[in-house]
Image (cartoon, rainbow, N blue to C red; front, top):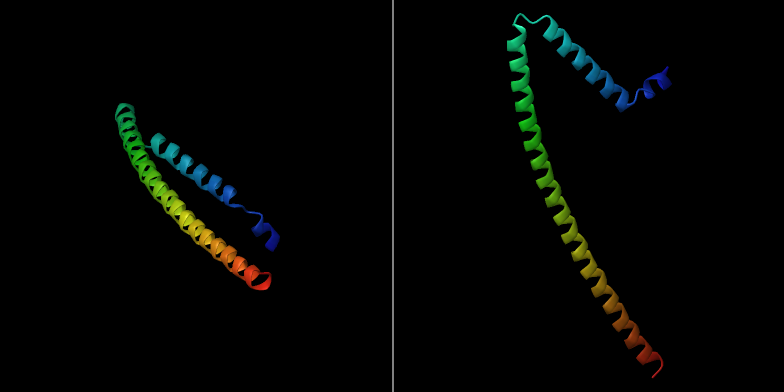
Length: 103
């Protein structure tokens, strides 16, 4: 029985949710007490608002992504400098040992 629950993937749940939402929207439109013209206007207004909200969220997401990329670049540059310093110190230490060992 546990295997059946494990098979229910996130994609299946998402699809089920979207399907249920779509069925609800269709039922709401069909049984709405408003006239068709008014319903179409309301739907267009809702679609425009949703589009504007989506565009705004996309801009915010892009800004957050750009910040994360910059932080990543900064982190990599910092770590690269640390590694280069460690390599340089290692080379100098090796050179000193070689001079002590084999003059």
